[in-house]
Length: 220
Image 1 (cartoon, one colour):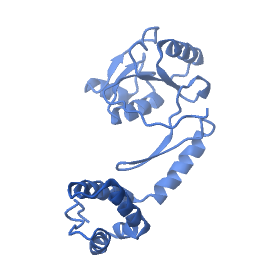
Image 2: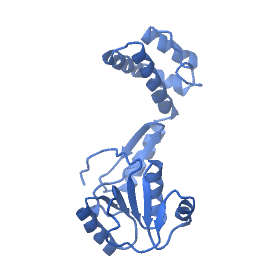
Image 3: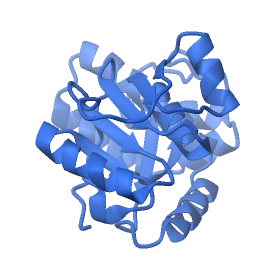
Image 4: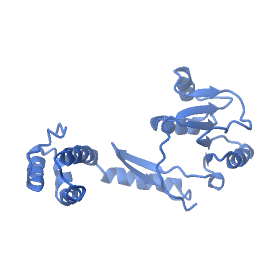
């Protein structure tokens, strides 16, 4: 699968998970973390899914999958140990126009779930087009080592700085040039070392304005 890379907004959208095991549980967790409205169809549930159902975070129908379950869904996961059922779900998904991922069966997938590294609002997704999930995980782990917490801090600071400079009348092109210069500086190293004075000097040098890292919300 030579996939088209995209980040989907599933906030409040109905998403179906067929299966109630540990793999299904991981899919449910990622959907909930993205704000989806999750429904699970399965005869049995692992404890984590049962707990989510008890507290009302997901809806559950404890039965076997049947045609019509995909109606109205935005996307769906099939995570069972029954490939005959997976094939049936894939056929139904095509008919219903629902995006489907069949766990570990790329031939029936409309999308592949990447291995994801997160640093706050920074998200890096790694895919091997379904050929080697283990390699995708290894690459993601290497990225997590390379991207320290200073990246999360930098994004938060830059977002606030961008807002502040826009309020002060800086044009888009001027702001873009500033952030390029900042990223060519040692700003990430200073953030990594929690060097507030160094960051403040950089801000003064590159903006020519009275702006401190504290005013941008950085506690240091």
